[in-house]
Length: 442
Ligand code: ATP
Image (cartoon, rainbow, N blue to C red; front, top):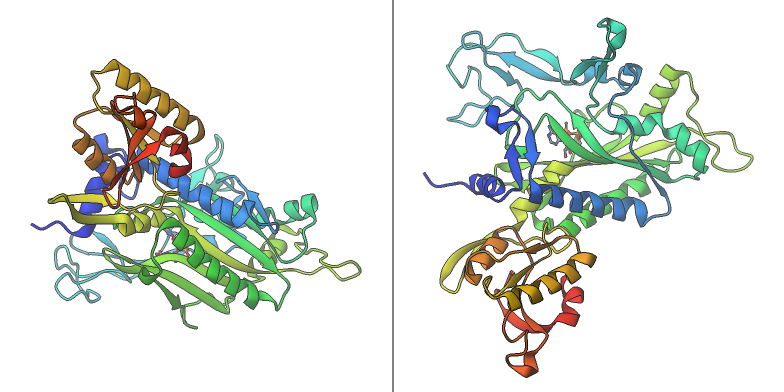
């Protein structure tokens, strides 16, 4: 059977050490994935770039890393305990459970009225809360129940007052957080697109009441700028204005940014104007006023909020899908990942032409050590012939391969201290001086 684009990405991701099924030797755990040595580098590159663009490079942003476990009252106030649920249906015959709004008839692709597994009849649709519950401490009573956070935003709202008290920011300003979130999805699927444990990068951007539209527009553009920076092409990203009936009641505007994933056009990120819903709710439930003085002599105000919400794992998947390329080079079909430099898990690989010539190995080690001091994501490879090493590096998206050969050692005196540097996308090789290598690869 022909492999689909998605199958190829999943198998490359596993084979080359990007992403493995969670707990694989025990038969896996549905909705969990483990990032391997190269996957964790990509994920860190994505998170670091986001943090740099949206926190460190700006004067109006504050970073945060709040606890995953929170006082359950926070989730009652935010409405998650009562309302963070998906519609669930169960087949009366085989007991298989489905998300009622996503269950499809495999032959028509339309909403199924019978169980797609066995043809059995569905029971009543009921609401299924997606938060994972856990017990805090040694006693198991209701007072010890809390939840694994289903989004990072909650931690931001409960720290609003702390940040105000420590830094006295003026509006508009934002608080950003990157971290794990957990949802007991009814039907985890599509690789890392919908999992039960994932990571989010979220911002609550606080504005004066009535001044949200400018901030909304700015963050709309920022979402596109981020996509461009990580190598997700604008042509594959589509804005979906969420209609009146589908938006939360407190939101005057929400945009879903959808990406053309190999399995269809699906949500990548969200951007929502949330009014003062969250600060009001937490203020009311905690009894702590969540207002701030924005200008001397003015009454304290409760800011309104614009919330861009990015999924780390969906970014990784969109980046992989965008980078995955098959072409022909030197008469051979090859697969390569066309990552932008900033995302590539390995920026350059260093090879001695032959691994059994100590003088080549010593010189190559010298170059490798020098580069690695400044660019940690550099790799050593001396296994197999150069052609094979190129293919291997292409498959993991390494932008440059650097080969140390006899000319580097001065066999041709005019080429002493130069190396071959080979470009991933074009396959072209050039001679370059060792002195210039660092500036070429960063
Ligand atoms: P969906 O409609 O696909 O379930 P959502 O609208 O519930 O997503 P949000 O609550 O807006 O998602 O979460 C913000 C972001 O977190 C999403 O845009 C997505 O990038 C990411 N995200 C949400 N749920 C998951 C999940 N189960 N697995 C991976 N990423 C997720």
